[in-house]
Amino acid sequence: MSIVDLKHTTKNLKNGGMVMILDTGAVIDPESEAMIQALHSRSTGGVKKHLEILAKKGAKDFMANFYVGYGHKSIGDCGSITLFVEGISMLAAKAIQDWALYSGQESSTRYVDFSTQAFIDPVGSKESQEILEAWRQFYLESMAPLNDYLKQRFPIQAEEKEVIYNKAIAARAFDIMRGFLPAGASTNIAWHSNMRQVADKIALLRHHPLEEVREIAATIKVALLERYPSSFDHPIFDTTENYNEEWMKNDYYFVHEEYTEVELLKNSVDKNLLKNYQNILSSRPMKTELPKFVAECGYVQFGFMLDFGSFRDLQRHRAIIQRMPLLSTKHGFADFYLNSLPEDIKNKAQAFIKNQEEKIKNLNIAPELAQYYTAMGYNLPNRITGDLAALVYLIELRATRFVHPTLQKRAIQMAEILKTEFADCGLKLHLDDDPGRFDVRRGEHDIVMK
Image (cartoon, rainbow, N blue to C red):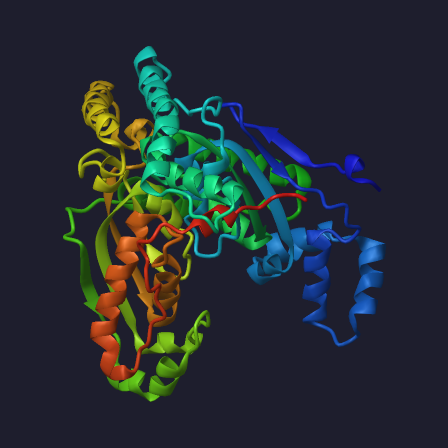
């Protein structure tokens, strides 16, 4: 069988996007994988015997009876699938990825042509469309002069390759201009997961505050039932549905007053216990993670302001607990984006932002819907909780010169707090010695077919 002969399961979304379940062409599909492993757990006859049973009976009845029917959820852990969800808003992508066990990839907005990229417009009025197109126009018309300005600020050095230098400048320009893109800008994601996690996640997504997300969840369910009818026809209980609907409606988004820089909200780490691992903390080499069992010592919680653009990067750290912030204009536009512009564009941007805020207000729509028309450069309160292994990994990765400056700043501030709190326990952090420096190697961070 060739690639062109594969039978992918595809369903369209109303906004022009789509959901696709990838057919890998394997003879033993995810349901069969799950069945074999489940039989293996109940018999010492060996996998060859189970393959004979699979060849004779298939996996469909088995999955319907034992996985869905009896509720043996661990069987669903044994078969994995890959979904592609395309043409959805940044907000919907973050909703799907708001899951500790999410695995997958999202289109890097740095490589998207926003002159043609669709913007999701749930209101669908002349006024709402004008807001979205105004963000697009400002982004497009500012990019070229910003590139020229950055080349003046960071001139190419004799030892630097021009191609790599130009890519690094373009990456820096996007780091600045992405703040002016609305969260309604469309993107694509890939989601690779076992069957249990997909079922558990869409059971929540179907109650999400955004209609777009609810439609995506329903469409995924239809596609799954078509592709794997024996593994996704779970019974639905009204009590569970009502409970999930209630908390998703009232408590899903994190709304809070402003934090001042980075605040240490909670430190529940047992230092006496942590000191037993003093050698592990102090001898850890660079680019090496702490053992997971350090988590038994307790958790640390931070609160800080961060723009939505950088929250999208922070959310990729699924080992920490974090809430989904409600994107709004309430806390103002992050200074970084404005202060990084040449003076003439900065002055224009300040007046433009004020005008856009007024237009969003005049739409007179629910705060959840207003997110689509709000740019990603707006500050939001964020609260994260994690053990030391998770936080040390996050901080060291995000405190480097190759990370967006607004997230880099918060990572450095959290590093200083951890060093102060746990210096007597031997905690050592490996940090960038010059995090604010423009480094042309940023232009090498690309994925290119050769």
